[in-house]
Image 1: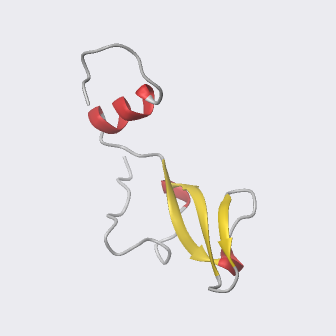
Image 2: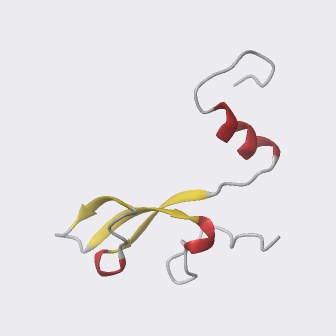
Length: 74
C-alpha cells in the first residue's frame, strides 16, 4: 500500500487506521440472543451465534475477544 499515490476506495478509513491507529467499528461474534438485528451481518442459529458490526465503544467487556485490547478511553 502506498500513501503517496492517488485516491482509492476506502482511502479515508485506511488513512485513519494508519495515522491515528484507531478503528471505529469491528465485526464481533456474539451470542445470537444478544445480537442487535440492525447491526447483524450474519446469523448462525445452529451455533447460537451471530456476527454484528459494532462500534468499538459499544462492545461490552464480556464480548471483547481476549486478543483484542480494550479501547483507549481518550
